[in-house]
Image (cartoon, rainbow, N blue to C red; front, side, top):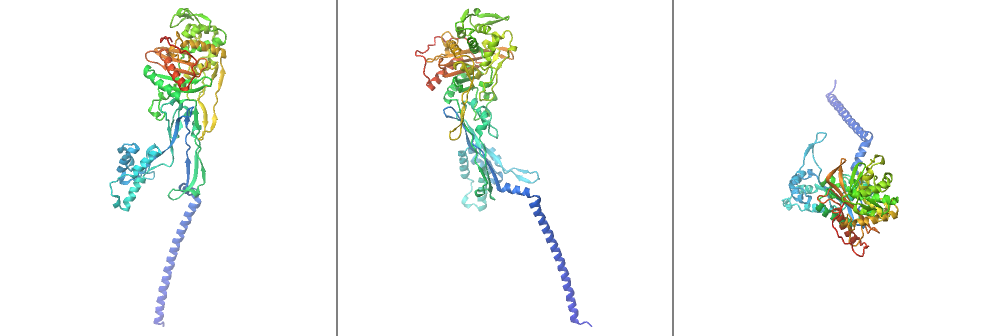
Length: 628
């Protein structure tokens, strides 16, 4: 028989076995959980390290590796004497993080409204957090808003001081730590972008605006004028820096991998003289008020080199704020607008005939008493002339005399010289938008063309073509390419590129040019059509032109293009000046409008440059009347 002790031991053994079985079950469960967890962890590691290694590696680099692009400073534009015409300043973009502002938006708006030049209510609206849902449907608040662009460093210092001095209406000595953190976050919410922007400044404002052009767009590129033509030279080359940042996005300088400095843009030195440019523009403003034309253009050239020392148009614009002006104000009429030149073109006809030895200055023509019939049509002069020699034809601006000179020369030769003087082709000036003008092929000339073209009809020309043609006469018959660029310089003023004067061709001989000059000198003398262009101590050679404007093939009554182009001193020219008025009001003859403007500009420019007079006894203007 079993003993009682044995029974107890059996019960204990069964209980122990039961506990062992439970322990094994829990162990198996725990082992399973651990195995599953470990497997999941291994899978996650495999997913991160193998399957998505590249993706997470790139995200880590994005967070800790920074590529900083360093923009170059845009180069300056200088005049011939080194005066600053255009420059650039690095500026900041002021932003805010509305999510950090908390309840202090009104205080910030009130304090910063004046400094940011933004109406307080509008600024308060910008600083107010706005809720929205992202692509995943998560509710978010905006963390970025631009408050003001193009803020100078000095202005940003003022804004920073305004932020530091904000009175939130709370006794800061009694603030809790949490309140202090909220105020600190609100102040830090106003910040600037790390990327620098540039502000293009034109110190002279409207001075030479059509020559300089302007910049615009996000990429800050040149849009017109020299800014556009030399954009790649002015822009420079970007630099970059690859470095690492800590968890607070601060650069760790010791981990900097690449550091390539930006190369700033080159400085451009023009042939423009801002002193003469100012003289021209001040006289233009006076003439605009007096004659109220649709537009005006003045160009001044050094005949021997082709250098343009002044170029101005009206209406004009301020390149500091070009968007405030109509597109027509930004058009450079000197190279984009064409018109029939009128009687100024007679100089081409006479130069061609003299060079071909078809006439001399003393050759006499019958001017038919003011009415000449050719091809069944009548050609008239403003005054009744009987017999005039070539010099007098220029002096009196006889249409009939010019037509008869051309008839003796022939259409082919006349067309040839017109072309060689540069008409019908671009001058290749370094400005955008230049047009060719109109010179019809000989095949399109009709039987009347030989009598109409010599007086500046049936052809159109730009102001730059006209001034370069007269400069060729002043330059002993040699046509020059207009020169607007003198050199490119680096930041230290070292010349990188130098531009030289370029001769296009010898159009007429120097002897012919001197004869044409002799004839043109009579135009400003008593009895000539431009006595009002005469200068006191300088001899002047020039020609007036008053052309009735043609619109859609028909001449329009009351609409005229009046111009005068001349050079001084006549026998050793320093400057050649072109003046044109498009549809002047009231007096429209060039002798009454363009000629006096020429004289004012020429006299002031001669004084500015210190040109030596060539007349001992000054010219006395005995008549204020004149013809075309």
